[in-house]
Length: 375
Image (cartoon, rainbow, N blue to C red; front, top):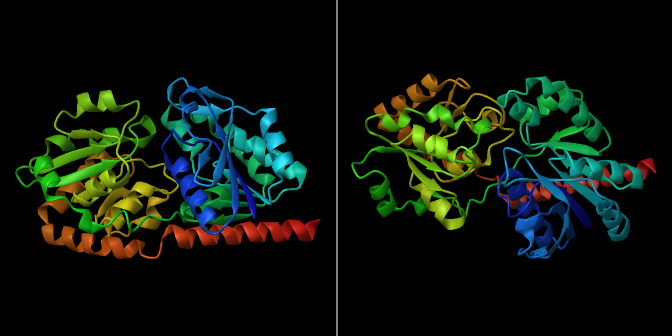
């Protein structure tokens, strides 16, 4: 099978969309499928390879966002139409379509190529966090247009499926995300790292993710001053400087990846996620695989991952006081914290990228069959 992946984000940007696309490319390669990736280009892409494994990478024009100078948004261009006509894929995979993904959706429909759209980013929710709630209607009208022409829309959680259906999107199926249980595992716990992070044996509470307004990391402000708690923040983004000023007692470790990130995860005691607009939350799943109880808002995709009283606890979305209260309860009850930690990894057993990748291939086959029958 020849698969054309059209993505709004790709290397060197590292985020949920990019990571999912990389895992999809890797899985398709193991199953001997041919892949081409069409992604935004830019000055920071000049030194990058034109391949990721066996997948060919084709770059299109892009522009920078005003508040995210390091993030490039793809601009629709003739090169994508030429690629689809000449490469002749069997299926088009649209990763979080909004701009070039929209162009890809309309082109695939016009050319009669089966397509699958992966819904991954709550654009309307993010817009509201930036004071653009009036854009909600416009964004959803645009998203409905995109998803109306694809063979199937795949959403990562029950909450995301329900929201899409409520907004009038048809042909929605649930397709979760895999987790690398070999990389993220409890035995990567590093005693030396723990001593550096918490020299007095404090409870180590960690956040891992982008430091941006929509992630609501400011809910952690004050937790860095809680006696007996050490707050660790892993990640980078436009809010890092402001958050560093507001949380002088926290340890900011910057961006991490690979084995270093896995060791940091395993060396925490509790993982906390703050953002209430997640369609899934891969970092929470990696924390669970690492054997950590998860403290998360009772909203969105996190409801599929965190079972209160089993592998974590939920707090009222956007409520800093409740978040801090839940952390203090775990701090005061080490036995409860240990029970939650013990159930964390088993709760994501079976969610490997191999299993999830094969589910994706089934979706490809099904939309292709529907297209053939309709021809």
